[in-house]
Length: 177
Image 1 (cartoon, rainbow, N blue to C red):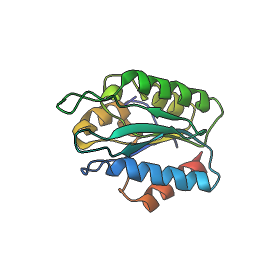
Image 2 (tube, rainbow, N blue to C red; image 1 turned 45 degrees about the horizontal axis):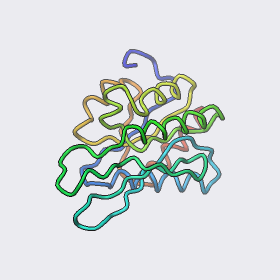
Image 3 (cartoon, helix red, strand yellow; image 1 turned 90 degrees about the vertical axis):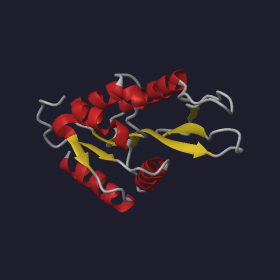
Image 4 (cartoon, rainbow, N blue to C red; image 1 turned 120 degrees about the vertical axis):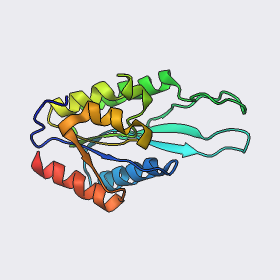
């Protein structure tokens, strides 16, 4: 994608260090846009804290309806590996793909993470949305930023980690479409 002219369609992203902060920013911006009647496709992540012996549960709330998909798996209190449930993520991606067919104003992807870096997860949908002239909003952990920028190329636009700034960017993308 790096060598294509983005035209008016962009891939806006936030990148913050604090654990879970980007999830809250993307979710709050998406909820504000939905409250204003903006048609969205995508998913936002909500983390539910558990007891001290377990990590949080990670759920994706599908923006085109009321579905919630669990994307974490319980690997036990002593686990150190990635808790992402790839099957859960792919299920959510399928649901979002169906919503993309409706022609939303914006695609919201909770995170461009390791699965996307490896060509899986929401990565194909991001490319599909951009090819259809639909701008995309996502979050990128600082450790994944170089791989994301390699993927996104000229489409990437860093956004201030502020809900108001994110909403303003989303509104500007809608006006440019």
